[in-house]
Length: 369
Image 1: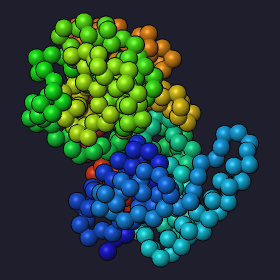
Image 2: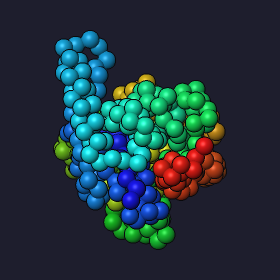
Image 3: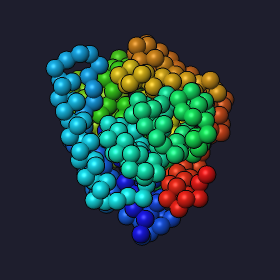
């Protein structure tokens, strides 16, 4: 029986691809045994068991960017994590280890490489994360989703696979009508989906809040607005009684597939997973990169699309002033919207999860060069 450890997490951008890869491995080899290794207290510790896979947490933490006493604890936890990783590898005896990025990938990837176990990395972003860069020399294969990744990794190790996305987002047949009913939307109107992710985004919320009176005047357009749980209560108090009839405010969209099915235009952050979803779903997109991510990698992700005419980008500091005008233009100019849709669709990479799973099994079976 083949055995694989998948390590990493911290954000949905790491976790959802990891779960997709695990699902693809199971489809190719139903007998394969998969163990996840994540970071204690992070969202993977909940999401992975919900998906039906076992997970072990490491006490690993991120290094603080400035010199603080807290970094002493970070180093101590790293040493603990390395010891625990050695024990996990010794007891589970994996045939391969897959690192998807995030703090937990570091210790388990390093231990695996030292033990001579094949190490496969998956890099979601156009600007490689630090954990994957540190592990790259020991990896036999690095699965990437963007051109030009030889800036960070040895060219001969790169395999262009794209980023896996959640399967339910790819099955859209008949879902638009269902989504319109669920969210109380008018199927005759153009629909804009605004989402800062499950946690929300203060700048996006502020930009929509500021222009609600203007949005209310858009007769043929409606807004589905996911604001995030931490913002919902305050926004309800501010605008709940005066929310325009063409705006639906939601804390969290449990059926993201249905929300996407309704959307003619999507306003979102520029995480790698989100971008892969938008490409596969052929959605005209306005990307607002988060300024609060390592090495500003979301801006680099967004620019990779903008340079190919596949999306529009607004910098976070400018979104309050520019968003409404751009959305009005996109909903009124069918040609511009259709051009963005065609260009982003041309960048879609299908079956990424299976491509990565096949690379993993090649490494296990010794078929790769």
